[in-house]
Image (cartoon, rainbow, N blue to C red):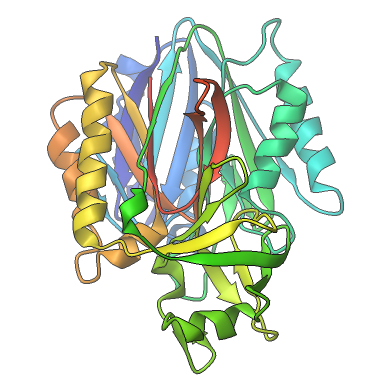
Length: 382
């Protein structure tokens, strides 16, 4: 059994006060079990002030985490916060680590997994990650690297994101030390039996479905229907004057030859008019665009959390795509409020926004496969 403890602080400048608030809320002397680990989410300002490092140093166990744009735990939500989620258990163990992704990211990730897995006589039952956003590697690459060496151990997590419009300040950290290209991984050993829940964009919300990705390289879209991507988007009214209108809030819905649907968000365009997505964009896939609005975001979040609650469980880790937050316009915390209304006074939870979501989903055969998505809200029930 895993117990979740949560704490938060809004104190950026006085790191002594920030640390004291976190420790007081966690009440470790009264609630900590034999094995524990901390997962942090925070505004980038908490890195610059030293609060992340100080809080991590004050905790008697390893910590990992990353920046986010908005976050919530039981009783608190907002952007200028640092939240700490502690997983603690008497019979489940935790091993956290990180690797700086450089020349051979796949090898680095697989070496990290091997190091963590070697610390237990049993195979991990769950993997958790906070991963960096990089121009040469996407969310699918993280999954493929881990699946190849783990045999498909369930992987749940996120790509770090920043509240800044230019994505500046994005970072991940291990034990308070942060880097832009740091891939963090937590291996969980024991009888966990997690359940996973994710939102889905209905087919009837997808428009302009007739196009095909005629050229792509990993997560770079180079041609749609034989046109430069920005030119194609201008032709259907989704771009103007060389800029995508709301680039982060337009879900790209891709359909592959086997009928599988993949949702991607773009995070920037290149000087050539290409589009860079957070995950792999298969060449030959059909592409459409989802006309999602605030009503869909809130309803889908409510339904997803409702399914998780109906199945039981003691705790919930929740990740939501930052593109959904942009869709909410002047109410950026509205989705978190939906979650809070469902879960406050029911069970401990944490929610953090992300640049992409990693979560196991079931295919048409009922097999549980690790997948990378955008524009979803995912939940891991423990």
